[in-house]
Length: 154
Image 1 (tube, helix red, strand yellow):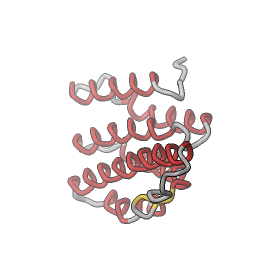
Image 2: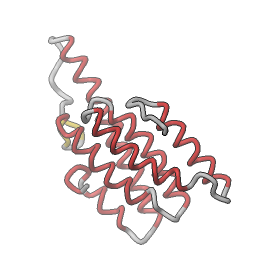
Image 3: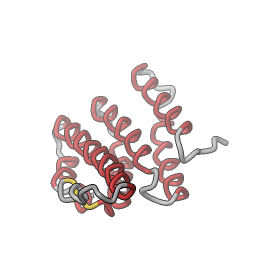
Image 4: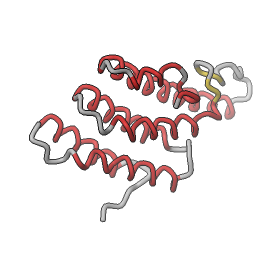
């Protein structure tokens, strides 16, 4: 994770929950900026007159999309088990961003496997006594099965 996100990832192991929360937000920001950069590079390919500037975002090259997706999945595999609710809620938001980022970053089968594995962590929280946690887990589940790559529920 440190390779993909640099010093952002080191704050994820902090004992202070507010630092972990901010680190998750920063990981989401990096993933979003890669998506914006990928859209911008696609536009440059369609219009050859546009500048090649912007092929790097915060030191990350566009070829790093797959590395960032995989690192985000490794991070999510840990933080979706978080006990502190604000951090867990941000982990659910990062899960949504990661699903959106998976399109085109990795092969569809790899994305399906990663998302279905991570979804198990959210499914465990469905039925929780804390209604906010239950609702967030339900919303995450519904979002995940409704987005591409399509997951089958069996």
